[in-house]
Length: 210
Image (cartoon, rainbow, N blue to C red):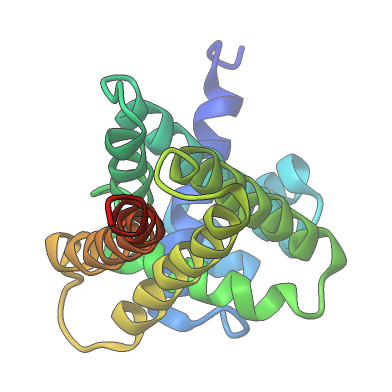
């Protein structure tokens, strides 16, 4: 009799093996047989659980997105101000589990593959919209809603850009450096819009005091 929970464990092992195999061999060169061997199961069992290589890859992307969302939620638990929540969102996107070489390689491969796969593209679009919305919600504490949406898009683009730069670098990813780059961008944007908002008020004060 199969042990209770064995299917869940094997599915998890196959998804982990998929991430590692993409890192080692590339998205298009990896085969279901190679993934199954790495996970310690037969190709037939992998097909039984996922149906095809494409479905296994889609399940891997959904798993990675869930892990990313969980990382952000974990960071947000102790963030009690808009600025702290912005930092939590940034840190969650670069969590140690997410920002390791194999996971970065898998994310980059999925972004490329999503151009020709409607289902995976929709998953990434949902993630991107949620990220921008969460950033904008907290940025509104420092600027107008319109400016907050603009800066949120810039911050999300910054996060994606840092990911790509680290994916293409030789050597291990530097999480602290990645977080610092995005934090500096956000801090500069907040300072700019707060200064811009203060300038008209200061000018009005000078006029009325004459």
